[in-house]
Amino acid sequence: MATLYNKRNKWYIEYVLGGIRKTKNTKLEATKENFAKANELKIKIEELIDSQNESIKNIINGNVTLKNAIKEYRNIYIIGRSESHIENFDYVLRRFLKIVSPTIAVKNIKVENVTQFVIDMKKELSPATQYTYFQYLASFLIYLKEKNYIDEIPIGKGIRPKKAVKNIISFDPVDLEMILNEAKSHNIIFYHTYKLLLLTGQRPGDVLGLQIRDIDFHRKIVYFRVSKTSSEFKFPIYSKLEQFLIEDLGINQKSNRDEYLFPNLTVNALGKDFRKIKKKLGYNKKQYYTLKTFRKNFATNMSRMGMTIQEVQALLDHKSPSTTLRYYADVRADELRNKIDNLQNKFTDKPLTNH
Image (cartoon, rainbow, N blue to C red; front, side, top):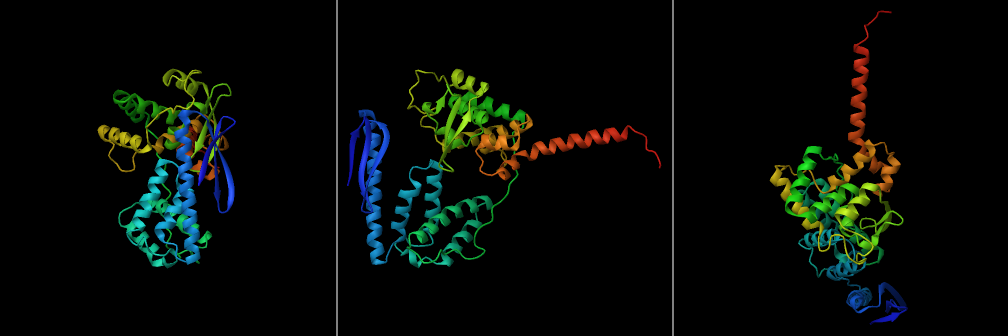
């Protein structure tokens, strides 16, 4: 169904999808080492073609099953995303399949089924998690409507969980030093990962996705592939970051460009290690520090050093400045507290006069 071939020293895949012949440049050099990677991509494309053919058959019969629709959606929109994104999607759909049979025709999914899904989440999950998980299910249901598998999206009014706005906690300097020392004492790889999170403020999955080829010392740029938005953006290599990359991680011109900075390390493994450190140090509160705190810490430090909201927004790759403003809460509180203290001292030192 798909053909893998060598063209101009690159592996290419040719296939037919929806009656249209397509060619994909894998961008992998045509070496024996890359053949397995290219062939794996070819197999995924063939699975997608099978799924599309099955969908067409089901559309004709007017009987697209939930199981087949999930498989099709997963092959198109989920495979290739970050590990955490894939795990979240699979978990959400497993929960939904406890309510609705996988063999049901998707046109028979009812508002009541989605409502029950939300009710079950409210019994055991936080508002923020409810909102996130609902987004996964809603995106899938919207896809069914776009493909004309269903006539209406089965989401009733008032069902959608509201997005919880949480305060963003930054590290206490003493706590941060203890966390880094503990990490350094038991596993240098985890320690280096935490340090890079602090130095760049990027999401854990995007940091773990870095390859040597993404580090350009000549242009002083790190190229991050953002899993959340499926985009790429350029992060500046400033002096302290450059020193860390060269001296601590040992990256140089002779490094294998295909190597990952942290090979075989996953967000789940990193999160598990971080929770162990917190427990050992006595940070047992559920919402105390998380891996996201490293991002908050970077943004807070940048803002305290005088960077504008727009500059911090660019460094964090936020699409909206309103998101970045949340990271300024602590800084603004500090500024206002100092201003109040200065004003109070100023007027306390002056004798009050009657007019």
